[in-house]
Picture (cartoon, helix red, strand yellow):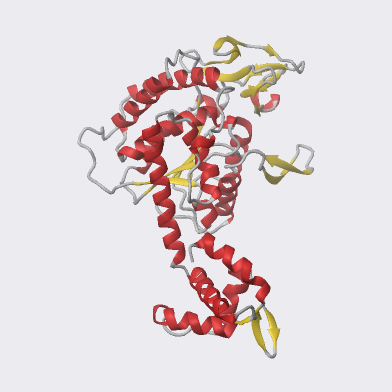
Length: 434
């Protein structure tokens, strides 16, 4: 992993300004920031957790790396949260427990999601050891604690930076590309616009390593050049609703906020000491990264049965960090239950119902083609009342072709679904629970 802003951006004239680097010889380099002294440095770990702070690092490629400037507005303003230097993390169990204590003190989460969030914080610091990562989401109406939860969890994450629905997407692209780390996005309920489309692209591409978003940028010579913005990494968002894209929805582990009375011991206003406590934990998490980044890998035993491959792909990284078999099983059960609820909801959509009607028609067709009219008749017999009356053959045909992507053709004056589409219908039925 490389995150290297330009020398012009950082203010350095010599060396390669660097935020992070994972070297081939298992050297880890991370930018640190001392807010009291207003200085930056590179924390360098070359021998499995042993480290020192340097201002200039020559690596095996011959490059000379230097820290990003402390005058950069993102760092100096606290928009991007960095550690100040590694501190002994002790054991993973102790570290996760202390993260849980911190979250419990400042935010009211359901017990299971609090455990998920604690391990998700840990995951953010080693996410680049995996090829895919999931996202966290806080969902609820205003005043239900979404932003508080976002701030509390996010303040511990790896190179976290905050953005909101009021932000333009250009700086989000550039910050993700330059710093990597964890995007914390508040008020993600954007209107239907280019901004919403750009955020959806970031979220859709950001779960898988090696899937940049291409954008055209203008050079200082007024030339238009395509640029691949790196967007891979953990993300936590807060929003009131859901995304229309079902594929994107499957990437989130969601906490529904405001479902119970707020605990009386939660502070209304965040105290000043919270920042110091969060920094202390980030410093321990940096040491955890130095000690564990190259030892961590996906655990095949973390895979769940009876769910879509996508869920296993996204959940595997988080579950692989959980050593306690009881807790891992509890979280797996919660994911499977959420998946079952999603399948149940999917089964009630118009797409799934048309698919059910098509499947029933083919079951009686004995290898022959099925007319769109037959599918429409079966659909209307079951669901006409729910849709305010019978749906036309044209309406059914539109869903068949554009939503289910099944082929139709005209035969003897009517549109039919060829018998060759039956295997596709069976596969779609299994996936949609139809």
